[in-house]
Length: 182
Image 1 (cartoon, one colour):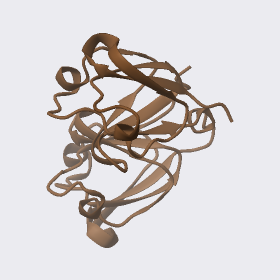
Image 2 (cartoon, one colour):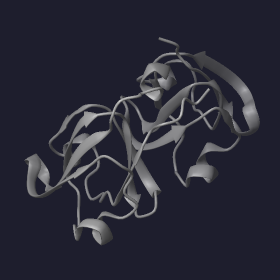
Image 3 (cartoon, rainbow, N blue to C red):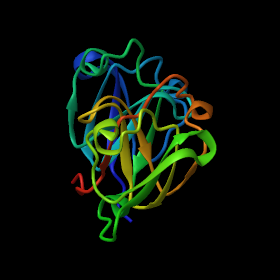
């Protein structure tokens, strides 16, 4: 399994002290006092604005991110990151996820195997508060058409997005992670 590589910088425009990693990091402040820019040299990562993979998330592909806060509209800096191994990116099987209108798999349920740009229009569903990812890796977005805050979902059961730190967040679109990010 090939891992990615990301370099975090304390200041905007790749200035100040830096920290490089190829693995998950639950607390970046152990290495840097703050993080306002980063460079993804290979692979893909989810970065979070709170420690322990909590708070707002942003999916980062290979590239340069000179000003994290203005680019993502966040008011805080990067505090933790999770590597998305290449083996997950090269998923060749089917994609399958069940989304539920309410927590604990309640209310309306719909099964997805393709991207959905608007659950309200496609399924007449006003909210998605839990899901079961059976196959593949997905990004869920707060707004229709893959905009707004996002959450990375790997296979597993997610009974309550609120318990995951997404209280008040409505997820309205879902996209499969399909490219290899190399």
